Length: 168
Image (cartoon, rainbow, N blue to C red; front, top):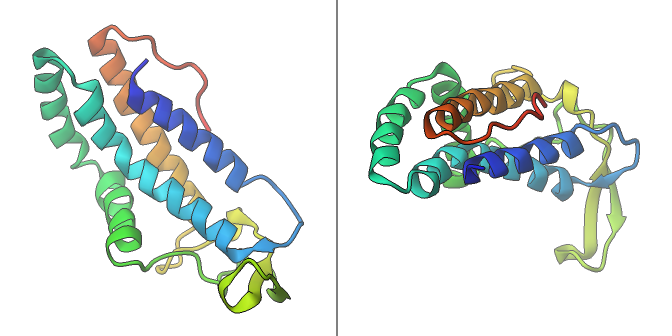
């Protein structure tokens, strides 16, 4: 199995956990960290494929040509790359409490946190919107489906077994 496929399967599990209905209030930092992890890992699938899975001259040549093609895909250019850059290079574009996906927050005492408090809330991921007002979850699903198609193509070219546990 491609290492990038194992990573995509892990992302699938993170997304499933992130969007699981749960009426328990949790620290906002839990939701933020899950979201940042999903976005960062969605971008790194291509890196893992290129740097780890393309481990022979033939695979490197094939991967190099495909990587250039994949980077031109609309979901890569409009979501995967820019969202990762916003979050990890500029530290902006994270989840905002004013987003309709969050319930009214509460502040609770939490001695484990700096400032001794935590902001807690519930989350409805289907209602989350990005800064432009677009729903976030369909973009995440589209990005994961994009990588699934790319890796399925690579698995076919490399004679690898494709993962049949899709979609998310």
